[in-house]
Image (tube, rainbow, N blue to C red; front, side, top):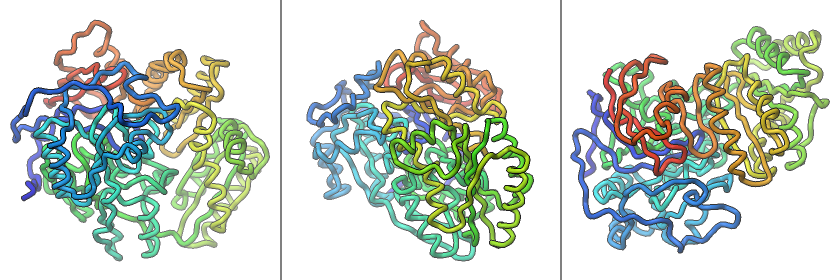
Length: 556
């Protein structure tokens, strides 16, 4: 029997102490042993300390995470033959120990970090996930949930020898309601396949990502992915109606409601949206899909400066209103990279900045009239120097490819340091300019692109190879600069670094993790962002590079 809890009171959930490491657009994170007040802490047998397994083949050019960063393995147990036999009883034929198959799962998409897991588990059902996690909890075995492994910051691969729990086989649609547009599916469903499924029924998924062909919906929810449709449909915190989650001890938390309005008690699903696998493994999702638009137009425009980009955005919102569905920007170096490495064609004259504007609505004539009026205004005022419009699907996809494939182009340019930050729009591009001046010839490119509609900047720095000196020049400078600009969030940096979780600012983290501070438990008062209260933090300088503190309790 799988223990299930349908929550009424949730104060106990805030007592969780996940042994976690942060990741940003990644599709999971390590789940270690956790404390839940209703379940006693248990230690099974003397803990083993062991590094990586030499039987996992080395991927050429990809260093082990444990070699690249000064991290130490936390005191988790080591997988034994008895553990493998137990897993085989739970999921017969889906316990992977072959080094060749493990090679792919141990390396991130950018091939920048590598773990050395010896076991990959592929459950198909929530019950199987529950049995696996219950066993790991009893044996004190570390687990790394993994979805599509499309994350760009190393969070979906192990740091050491954590068990990889893949959701790839949990790919079934459970139900879809043709009137409400509510989709219920397993967490391993690929985003693009879900989009095709609902499009055939007159709807679309409320999020769209460049990695849609591989990423899983469970990973999207676990990382609170935004994407290109955020401007129109908002965040997953609004469109996700319910979740089914397996906690670290195997308990199934059933919050899989399909109600748009549910005022019964605490909204526990919000704890797991953006939790990145640290509080539990998402196994099923209920999500609201908007109607499929009848008319879609894409305009690709060139701008003479970033000030003009901001003015175009303001004009867009005023003139396009309800049909505006995406507003993306990229700088000239991004365009140079997609042309150089992917051989894509620039559709407009060379400009310092480029904008992609998408409209979607129910009437082609109505949308075309509004778009024409906007373009006439933008061109006539000099805000835009050149532009092209795509209305047929092939041209729309070709224009979107210029924006969506920037990450791919960057991966061909060398080693990439990636930062995903949110800033006030008036300071959106300043950090790119400052880093170019700060780093000088140490880099190949410093580029900025992203979703201007929600203030999300993708800052990328490329170099010939990984450089500790370059990393030291970037961090913590990027974090402190963002904090001084009143950045609303520090989503993630290169691999794993301190971030403003629950609006804890960088300065707080630096004070907390100051040299010489002993790794004991102390309280940190947090009053920013409506999260007033006292959080008890447990600093760890072992498993998470950079030194992190994890929340162990909360008092309002």
